[in-house]
Length: 141
Image 1: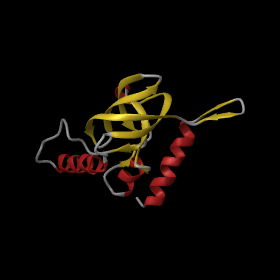
Image 2: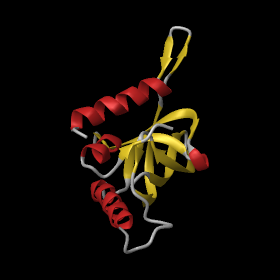
Image 3: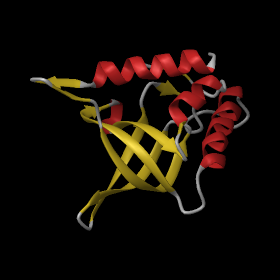
């Protein structure tokens, strides 16, 4: 998938998951979050700063992408190797202090009860980057 195709795909999902309330378009909720654990290329445990000295811990699934599995597959399999590569791709982009920006779609949880989010690291849309660099395939929830 080219970078432009990845961008267009994710933008299409942003519109799909947005809500219209009267004349107001509710796209998403943006938060700063600290990475507690990168589970794999498309799942992350975060401590989300909600403001007003309030933080919550939640698990997030990257909206629109599916990376190969690292868990539940044989470690000598091609899927495992690709899953490790996808995780390493994201991990290499994480800032030292662990703070990232997330765009969360309210009331939109994916399979297994994870919140759906677009992750930004230093302004880079990681969901798009995973697709454009061949570490993920498109997946609409």
